Amino acid sequence: MRARHKPWADDFLKDNTEIIELNPAACKGNWKQEISQGRPIHLEIGTGKGSFIDGMAANHPSVHFVGMELVKSIIVSAVEKVKNTERSNVTFINDNAEKLTEIFAENEVDQLYLNFSDPWPKNRHEKRRLTFHTFLSQYQQILKPGGQLVMKTDNRGLFEYSLVSLSQFGCTLEEVTFDLHQLEDPMNVMTEYEEKFSAKGQPIYRCCVSFPK
Image (cartoon, rainbow, N blue to C red):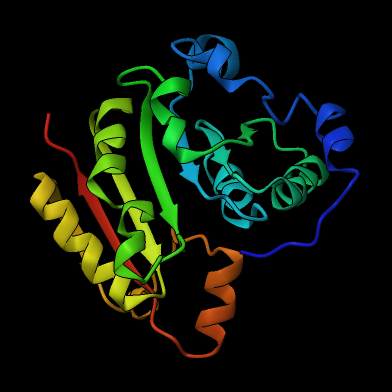
């Protein structure tokens, strides 16, 4: 996702520490005590401009949602959105998914979401895909026993790659759909990309998996 540089982003984030955690590694092992007040933690990696996490927070007030986004000029839009809707059950972190186990302790996350991740289609970039086995190892570590990963994408190549990668890792495929909106799932909350692609008639792929323990 490309975004225009926003020179005011640093100051904006520093002024909104009730919504964004500027030192997430310091919360490791204490997210539920210090951040979520004991509520389950659902983590979205690559939260974009925040439509999904804001909608989920509205629908599930008993859950605390954490949105991870690497690009600072994008995460400010998510922070601004949640600030405007006054959600009290959302926290953002501006960091890299490669550092998940530095930020969350073992079994600390209850559910994980990957929405419209960069497909990194070239073979030499396979290690950057968020369903590559090194990332799956981190997800397995931070997810509680029975915790699930829910993935949505418009990219069939990435989806098929992910199904193979997840299966080879030992995950159980609880749900696989190649046309999400044909299901008319009332619980589905759309991301910005999902709204854009579905309006063009493109199928949206979704899977839900559980990890071996």
